[in-house]
Image (cartoon, rainbow, N blue to C red):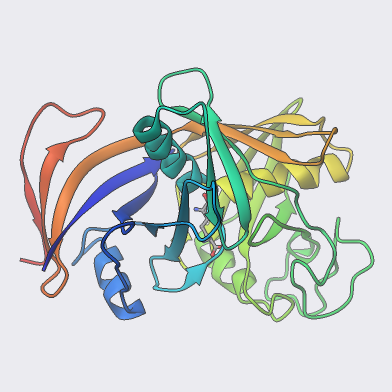
Length: 304
Ligand SMILES: N[C@@H](CCC[C@H](N)C(=O)O)C(=O)O
């Protein structure tokens, strides 16, 4: 069966987006991993399934899978992308998106294709991250077993933005090979559900450079929830003000941790790369329409 999809990204963090509001779609982790492979499939960081919401007045439910097939509760960049699709489709000023991490609202941010998402309140208690043991202060927890010798990589700040994040403040982000330390820290026993791992370095007042090793994916160009988690950790640590610019390899996200209601607001771009169709049995896929930045074209790729 051939199924249409949209390929989108937020700052290079890329997604296949299915519209499953009228035609149900359930894929096994094995099929998701095959589709997500950049060698044999379409290739993506996350797979997003837009379904009908079970909550009245809510525009849609968004299901999120990492490219390894695991289902997760939050994805900031994909929420902006789905927000854009629902805003364009409905013509509304704001849309509500149901996720397994709660209800999130999306609005246009001003510039074309830029979207602001209210990511809700961060959670910072040890059992909400979750951590395997009690820590009274989650601004810098002490990892008892260090998978790496460097003492800096023993004291992460931890924040849950609908998913778990460990943040390591470093002086020079280039001094670390995140592709080596990321997998060790992602699976550290202190994180019973694993964690997204960020290295964060101040590069100016309220400007932070961040590299992310995403749980269930690996290195990505950007991670929206990580940007929110870093901004929250910086405020909690009195390192930054309530509004910060997070510089990721794929570009910049503007984050505000609002004082009035403790909600985290994330603003940044979205892009439709192309429309496509895939045969879910053979994983053979075709581009069917161009994206935001393409001239009209047709191309073929996939397992064939
Ligand atoms: N890319 C996302 C985060 C996706 C989920 C993450 N890998 C996890 O396992 O929690 C973002 O933009 O937030």
